[in-house]
Image (cartoon, rainbow, N blue to C red; front, side, top):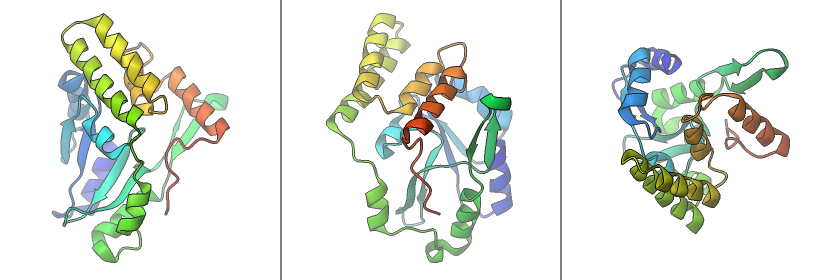
Amino acid sequence: MPVWQHVYEEINDPNFVIICAAEDTGGEAVAGPIFDAANPTYIQIVDENHIISSAFNFVNVPSAAWVDEDGRIVRIDEGTYSKVHEIGEGEQAITFGNDVYTPALKDWVAKGADSEFVQSAATVTGKIREHSFDQLKADAAFRLANLFRAHGQKAQAEQYWDLAQELNPDSINFIRQNLTLTEEGSAGETFMKLMGEYANSGKDYYRPLDL
């Protein structure tokens, strides 16, 4: 978030708005301190039930949609890193992110519909991942798990949590959310292993950037 805050200040355009959604079942108690520490001046919301990622069928965070002044989506479902990042050390180091997304975003803010990075309705539609029936059932199971957890019914929560991941095993959102409840957190050894497995199998951790 601090890096996106810097980008937001650089753009400094009243017609440009960032809405940052924390996809976390822990709610304000978990996400609030992170927002407070980053102290962003753009809009921040907490999405406990992953409604946003479900609506857009995002499989991982951070992901985003560009929405123009007419409410039309002009880009969608991409890894929204503002720069290249590296975590870990030595042979365990993993590099991710890119340095082309932020310049493209700035070009869009400056040029609007004339930006070369604006995609047609047909292109955007083609990039929206269609929901399978199992994915829809997985989203419902995920929300039921959160409801049971909120009411202290651990067994039922785990039952529906497992069902959600069984129905939609490719949802990294689900996997990372589950990892937040462990000591290692959502960016620990298990997550690093997952990233490596995706890379080695040729699976798209994110949809390749069309930039």
